[in-house]
Image 1 (cartoon, rainbow, N blue to C red):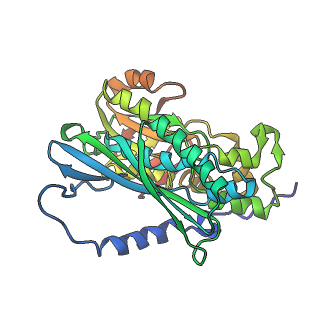
Image 2: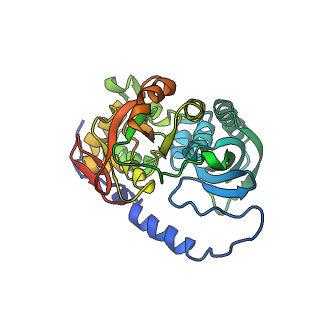
Length: 343
């Protein structure tokens, strides 16, 4: 099979992370209203979910969607897993501050009502809810034939955490260990880049590759892993200083925890074969891969070195120490000579 060594990037595929950050900043600077009394937003910056003051506890609220992974589902005619992704993208963000997710609402925008498609999406949502122990309490289906082609799926999650148990990253110190938890694959990030690479190399979703032990489409559609139960179990036993959902932005997400230290990954987890295939077909640089995809690590836990062994045991299969917090700034993967200065 001929390969087009184009040195593809996420930006060339149509998603410019820097431009996205600028767009977010331009929106956020307009959102200046703050309520008084109960229910005020807590001033904890850089986290993966918002925190709301609610007396003795803090509520958490976040929202996210499945993205262009839905185009893979549409092409394969398989909709029963993307609900897991929708749940995962939200609950994995929720637990980053030590919060327990408990309520979820979904939003489906569709060009035409299709009971078979929505039923299959519901199957995945129900599976995700059970995995996360998070109840789906409502939702919305909008039929928008003039605005939407196909299906868009997103959701919002409500969680809670006792105020004295909030994990913000402020306690992260030089010498802390970084534990990596394995991803299940591509999760729900970087699919625009992956799809463009496959299209440019005329690789069909139904094509088999021996290293994938199945088709390309099956590998890309593998649901995002939900880390809720194992992380909450760990939090009851050890003191954690920071947690990261390794989603869009890859290793750069660690920088969100604390700005005046460097998070170094010296023993990265092994990426699944689908990543090697995408990288080779697209001629993608390692720096781009590790700031776009999970590259085998879907979640990161930062904690004192002396607590690492107990945490690894509680986090279960595949979890291990992948690096440490060092003097400096930013995030790096010294094993591959990669450095990231900011998110």
